[in-house]
Image (tube, rainbow, N blue to C red):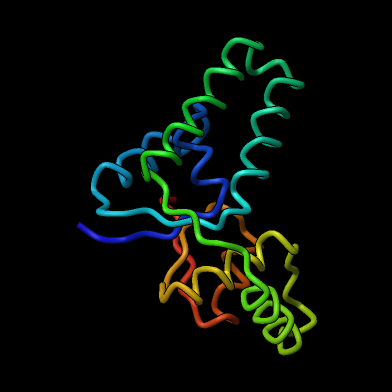
Length: 145
């Protein structure tokens, strides 16, 4: 059993039936603890809403998933790491040293910095940009694929 850091895409795979969802759920059952940034709350809400807008989820299913996620946060299924000024300044510092070829969105950089601040040496995601940028942050990018 181990501790894992998931970005929001991997957290969402635990609630939505997407490619790789079964493999991600399997990881959850074998983990001692799973951490993610508290940014996940907003990102999860937007992902679930987008699935509703795209017709993938009904209004009832959307509300069920929202409540399930909130319950899972409350019962510490997910360890939510705070987005502190320290995390944000770490992002700023690390971005200064990124090569021009490394594309990175703000949310992904917060996940990377949060993982570093919490002492993780790897981050699980299926996001190709985050996977590619992880090494520049001293992290190993991992994917079930």
